Length: 600
Image 1 (cartoon, rainbow, N blue to C red):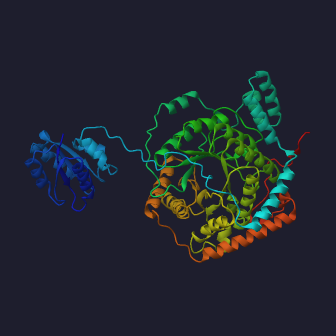
Image 2: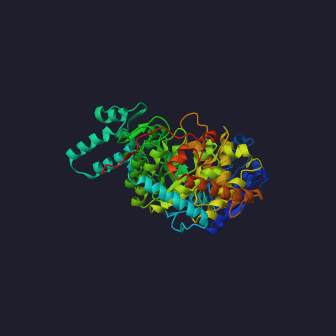
Image 3: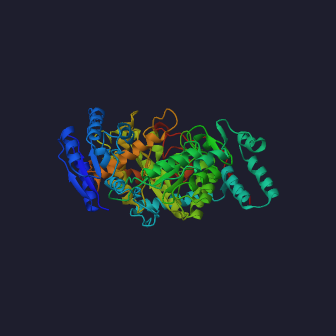
């Protein structure tokens, strides 16, 4: 059935929206008439009354006096008898469906209305929004990389350092490794008697408060068991299945965001909303106190502060409610429970792990010797599970020179390669203390970050994932500014064609309480606008980027030579060769003196 529609751009200037809708109606075969945009209320009513229209579609962009004008318009339409033969529809930036209903219009559309949506309404059919996900399926981001080194001197140095680490680690173990092995046995056995015996062994390797959880059912302060009703309430809310794509012209970089609210139910809901706003994946963030406890609680557990406890149940609650096309990472790059968390990540079927035995062993982190043993176990879990891991160099946030951070990352990369893993380089995109002090970012935030990517690509053919998240120390206590700097850094990643990028909510770096979904959406909207603005365009670094690249290359070689000459990677960490105390690095103390020789 072909319909007759009058298109009314009821605004002194703007009529592009109504003309786009008219084009859609014409394409569908309907008869349309378009009025000029500068008619008075009386003239519009006269034109509407003269024709035999099925629909009068009115647009109003500017909001000045909109209620008074539209009230007068609808009253005159009634008086002229237009309402008896035509449906009257209003839409535009100044309109909400609620306002339209209050004023007496048959239908109201807001600024997000599409021409397709208006067409569906006119034709009397339900509008089904297009699912605009830029990417329908996951792919292996590491598959296109050979992991071949282009810089032979660095490759030789890393080979020797890697072999020394693996030889040193071979006869050693830790309470974290032993607990993970026990936990795996507990999950595999069907014998309750054996489970009980294994649990006793597990408890003997735990701190008192974790032991009390198993022996007395006593929860650590700030934690509680998740109620079944909470999950049922979550699952009663259907996923819309719709996506507003963040990407514009390119699928890379994948946009990954931080999760980890403390409650797996809240995480699942935030992930669902984030999926509708176009993210490509999420990171399951663990609370910092977990890193300092020997042992993990088990079961579905909620935590009242940021960071979700990495029990197998919690990881599965989040993973199983994630859209199948979204990537999922569990972060266990530091702490006394790295081995067990990596085991759970494997069993839950994650896409990425996160391991960095150097960054995680500095300042408030884990003892270097302990974390190195635990990290190697975690790398082996990624090999068994067939998923990749990244290695954040967030130690740069402490003030450690960038070249030492990149050297540490390359050592971790080599260890992963030697163990058969698929590591992903993760340089930090930020305004680091080292750069502040030494002036590498006085002019701009582009050159030094570009240099990091260029030097890594010059050294090895491996995937790159800037994080963690991008923009740290460029954010201010203002949501607009914070979203802008996140978007600019994400745009730089797109211009450099990195594989992924980690972004955060606008309150990530200054949160005064729980991180809210609104602040996440601020970042997503800004990133979408940035990627639309850029398209296939990019940034033009200054000649400084090249000089920084050569500087980083020379200093990485120098650092690796120093570490190799030391002959003991563990001692190199303690002695500050990859980050000294006066550079902001202090070896972590959690788990010190707990590494032992394996029983024969």
